[in-house]
Length: 98
Image: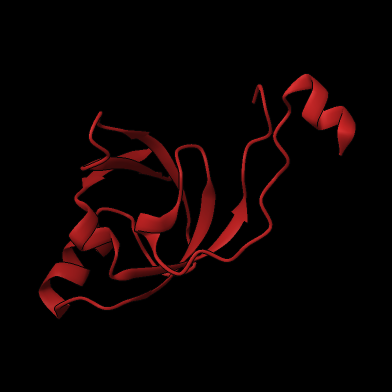
């Protein structure tokens, strides 16, 4: 702990994110339940955002909205109001320098 504090290293976070919008840039998660209208959920699934798939937060706009998520090589930009209705389970976070 002291070593990490002295050298400014971040530890991996050990928490479960409730929604896709709660993830930070670089974090990975498994897509869970989508609380969306069926047509919108179908559209996202056609783009590759399917429950059980791994999603990564690729980048974020300066204001934090929208964000770009990467799923199987496909990049999907979503606003916070949409990504907050997609439930995920956190896989891991990048350590300092990753």
